[in-house]
Amino acid sequence: MQPINRNCRDSGFSYVREIMSGKHVNGEVRIHGWLHNKRSSGGIHFLLIRDGTGIIQCTMKRDKVEPEIFDLTDRLTLESTVELSGTVKKDPRAPGGFEIQVKELKVIHMAHGDFPIAKKYHGPDFLLDNRHLWIRSQKMQNILRIRAKILEVAREWFRMNEYTEFHAPILITAACEGGSTLFNVKYFDRDAYLTQSWQLYAEAAIASLGKIYTIAPSFRAEKSRTRRHLTEYWHLEVEIPWCDLNGIMKVQEELLTYMLHRLSEEMAGELRTLGRDPEDLRRIEPPFEKITYDEAVDILNRDGINFEWGDDLGWIEEKHLTLKFDSPFFITHYPKEAKAFYHKPDPERPEVTLSADLLAPEGYGEITGGGQRIDDFNVLLKRLEEENLNPEDYKWYLDLRKYGSVPHSGFGLGVERTIAWICKLDHIRDAIAFPRLINRVYP
Ligand code: NSS
Image 1 (cartoon, rainbow, N blue to C red):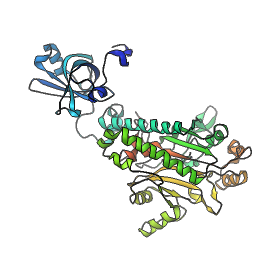
Image 2: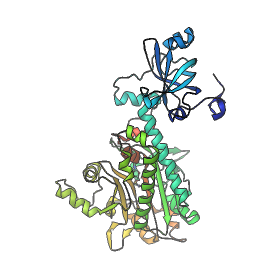
Image 3: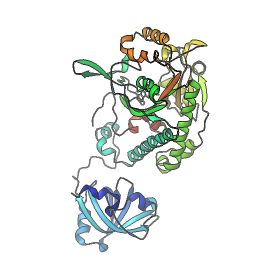
């Protein structure tokens, strides 16, 4: 094996991405990577080499290399790792328009000949069992690169707008989003839980840091098998003091629009490969449409979907509503009973809350949930009791309404749900490398 510093930029190896941008045409390059695919015909081996920055076709002609190299390449198994050198040529027949005409090739590791993922149809369970290998596929590469870019540009927006990143504990003792989806953890001789949201700690931190955000895992013991629920997902959350419901919707509009526009600029190729026209993202502009929960219920009932006022909107209802839209839109003012205890009742109509969910269009549904928080001690205490939560467990959280309470709002965006919509995925599991689902914690 080679020393690890060979991956560094000054190692003498070129990156495939660079070559595919046309930088080295007619020049000599050295690359290293994995054998993504191979075919041979008429004394030529066509190798597709993947190096983590891209995939390039490398052609090896029998009469242009040593016979041993040609024979070795003949035996080269899929996913073997190699170093090779040759001349870069522009060739419209090659995928991406460039290829390397190989002069030398060295095998670093000859892979076992039984790479489980073949060029044929594999069912979803097989691909999930072999996820550690399936993430090498072109589809997963594209999704994972878009995922990384989404978080990169979100951080960019937070930096430009002077937010501070704040971290809260993962091991916690009080539910944020209701007890039914809490994961229990044995914490020495007592019980603890895995966090559902950073929010309650964020409400403490705004008194220290002002406007803050995080990008961190959240956990939900979701017992339902759906296309949009993970048990472990990444949560982008924001909390802002001196901010009301309208203010927090505005923040979401601006942040999401920035993210979508940046993606359409920087990830156009990857998006197209996944079936998403970058123009779909580029044309999205604030303000987003807003309908109230009441209006949503009216639409559903008018369209023959039986839905009772007070229930939370589920998958079927959201799918129905979002198929009517081609841009994200808010549903506001959910009933108290459909939302967690911390949502501030609307002073003008206390049976509904100052809440807003942002729904992705095209049948995808909720991608963010948030709104204005209760800032009054007594109102909060009453809501805890109404929800049968033990105020003792929330003592520190109640303190925040004793010492410098402030009108404040926040939201949480489900990273994988957002990716699923942007990348037009059928199932949320493909928005993360190693999905955790009700029946899956391996690999
Ligand atoms: O439960 S939420 O609607 N809201 C909260 O957790 C707030 N405490 C966030 C906040 O105000 N800081 O979840 C927020 C988002 C929701 O809109 C989904 O996009 C996502 O988190 N979410 C999930 N994604 C994947 N899988 C599951 N199970 C899941 N649950 C929520």
